[in-house]
Length: 195
Image (cartoon, rainbow, N blue to C red; front, side, top):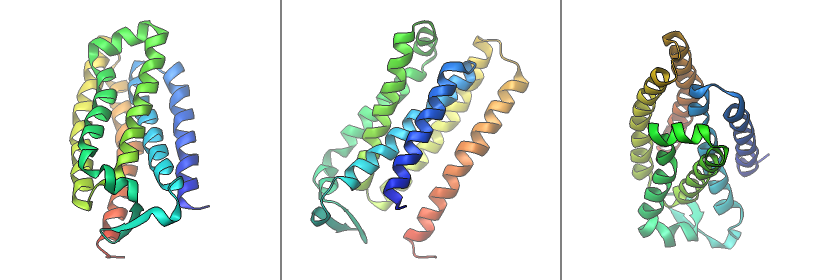
């Protein structure tokens, strides 16, 4: 199985698991499950631009072959990332999140919006230089600190115990962020030819 197929299947798995949690989880589980459609959308965005670009339409960019489309949209990619960030962050605000819990239509729209936001980001990732990818990841890591603060706010709003909050935070750190950190570290090491 090549890395493109792996990305596609992982995207389907992430979307399925997060969709189940999205429906049956408590408010903190639901908040954490918002990462699922973002990840699955990003993987599918990356999959689409790489899978459906003809082999003769790849060019060398920073010692890697990337779709020529990525080079063409590079100067405008910041607009896509801004739209992506808005589509994802909008549903995390306490007011909107609380309303979305009460109306199934909005709840479904939040899932789709997160997926589209992730897809846009994943589609644009190949257009970034190495240092730009490092900066994007660093900003994402900083945003996760805000995410943990949101977990605390929602635990107060929904009267969830501090023990449960701690379990959710530890699960988020060890299952999601630790895995992301390892993958990104391997990417950096390979990029600088350390292995």
